[in-house]
Amino acid sequence: MARPRPLASALPLAALGMLACASPRATMTFQEAGLLEPVEPDGPARPPVKVPAPRAKPTETPSGPPVDSTLLRFANEARSRRARSPQRQGFPAEAVNGWRDLSLELDRYLARSLPQTPLLELVRARVTIEAELEYDRRRYGPPPEDLRGWVGERLARFERRIAASRALGRKMLVAPAPRLLHWPIDSAAISSLFGLRRHPLDGIRKMHYGIDLAADPGRVVGAAARGFVVHAGWSPGYGLLVEVRHPGDVTTRYSHLSRVLCNPGDAVEPGQGIGLVGATGKATGPHLHFEVWRGGRARDPLALLGNRRLDGDAGN
Image 1 (cartoon, one colour):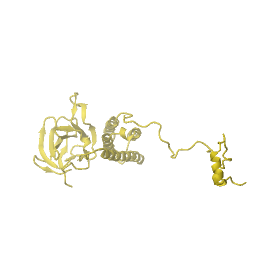
Image 2 (cartoon, one colour):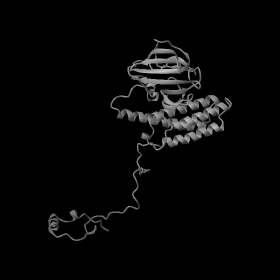
Image 3 (tube, helix red, strand yellow):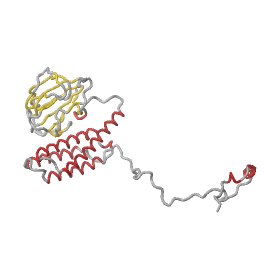
């Protein structure tokens, strides 16, 4: 059977002119027009990707509470478990179950869109998870392989999201972000956040001008950035306190120390030891109370903590 030929090639030019002047027919089939009939698809059209776009777009409003309360509750439960468990006798089932439950909570948190997981929450979560796992390792010994897998996977996801959040923030800011401070203690759990809280000793709701880092007594506290010591000694409520002035009208304060390792007027470098963790002053136990003041106002230290230097700090 001969294939139908297109109309333009089947008729001479004169015939085409006559057709243009003639009255058009009411209907014309594809065969009469010399065209191939379209082929209907065998089924509904498939999307170009395996998973189509969601019907609802995420909003800026968080879909759940901050992750801080979950992590603080887990940290308190973990400390209670360590207190009543024998040392270096392996991970108890209660601890493994606690980490498994926390992993599920973290999965629900990480399922939120990026705007619903603020950068400071992500940093607090990563630091707390790393610190609590290290404390459990010191108490019980090496964690089981599956537990290491759960925690490692979540930490990697937190790290990727932190990097994405910081990259997005740098693109949206007109002015460059301020330099960050070094952590005064590595692998320390955050036991109390910046802001209003009920004081653990007074029972009165008041402003907490810094963050508390839970750490073993005697651990070395390092300077958060290059600067010089303006106070090193006793201060009411704070106990043994070291205050360091940095470039950019920034001051950091380290309190409840058991020992001071510097003197007023000393120049200090980032990470240089300036004191030891203790519980002097109004403290319920060994920890470091860390404050950051900028321009005469207390700032949330977690907004500036990282691994970079302060503006104007041109050292290594």
